Length: 121
Length: 121
DNA sequence: GCTATATTTCCAAAATAATGGAAATATGGA
DNA sequence: TCCATATTTCCATTATTTTGGAAATATAGC
Image (cartoon, rainbow over all chains, first blue to last red; front, side, top):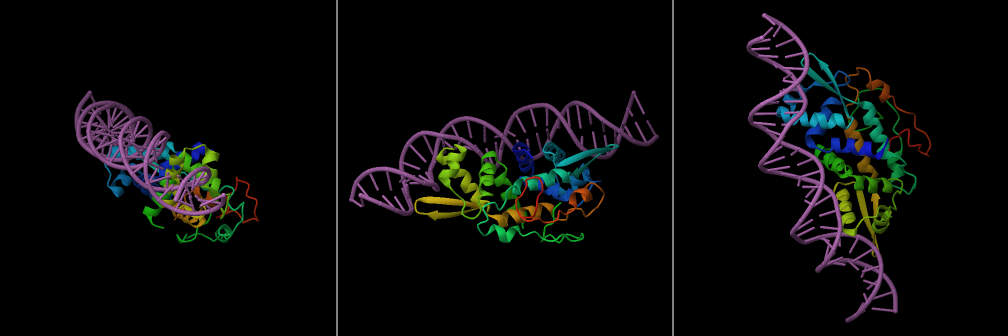
């Protein structure tokens, strides 16, 4: 992933409203949620919601799909994963303590993420 | 991790200069790098560098350590890890395709990160 | 074609963040 | 104490982002 791409993704997520939108979409999976549903859930004026959705979409974090009059938005897991990879790139090269303790990989488990332990996307 | 914390961390990283600083520090490990070294590497005026270092530090992403006149900054891997966990929280709940393919955990390997595959911090 | 719903675009005002020169602080050594 | 080095704080200027009302667009059904 290029720096420029990572930067847009981070900028996309670095806003309370957009982070909230994204986090509603992460568990929603591929079907995603309608713009209207998001607006209602977050109590946002249409113009404001639309602005942030565009922002997230341009950052590559969301996909858009139309069904009739309704636009559905879904989290783009591939982009997400690429961002995480970018951030942790070359982690622990210096191996000087502190890092090693944290870097120890957690064995993958089945599903039902507990929010405390992270598994790769 | 709380939303507020995640948000500050993301805002911290969502800037070209700060992302560059952070990524210089990720492979540098616990000893970190001196402010001066960072400034020289990135060709930044002292005041600007200092501003961004403070920003990152307040976001909890960096630790600061003084040795004589020199201040060393290091990446805080724990904070980093918490942020990644926060972002992927409840991923794949809906299990509706697209996600599953990406979520498959990668078996942990020894060290020598290839930048293409991510292991947990 | 008309009307209703869903959502976007336009745009100007308001809010927030970034920049860097100059002065201040901290430390070390003679 | 005085001087040099390392870095920070102060602050005014400039740049960027966010907000939301109103108007525009897209689609559906009659």
